[in-house]
Image (cartoon, rainbow, N blue to C red):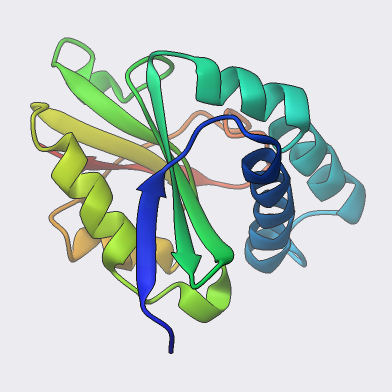
Length: 168
């Protein structure tokens, strides 16, 4: 397997195209068969379109990263300090992994999660919301995250149970 490289990104045309493609691919890999196709399409359309991604990348509260295998983008993540976070850390200086996706073929590679933990190290706590049955939870638990409270149903845009993972 080719060595993976993770880089910060800016809102360039090729970056947005890669995020749209990866967002769709990762969402299909993770959620197809768990929700109705039209619900999944609505989820993808709301989260992974050019304007939303450009606005998010240009938001100073966010840091977007992309992981590459050679020239091919295979994963992405966004760290952000704004938005809904777990009640347990409401009053704590924290950062959330607000978007995360890695193509299934690369999902066991630890580089992107490790980089996120490294970047979040200057905060008192980190959090992310994951589908409760996702194998992704295990990858982050190996890096010191623990399952926390359930996320309000539908908050993540899908009618599935989500939980917060916390690292404090």
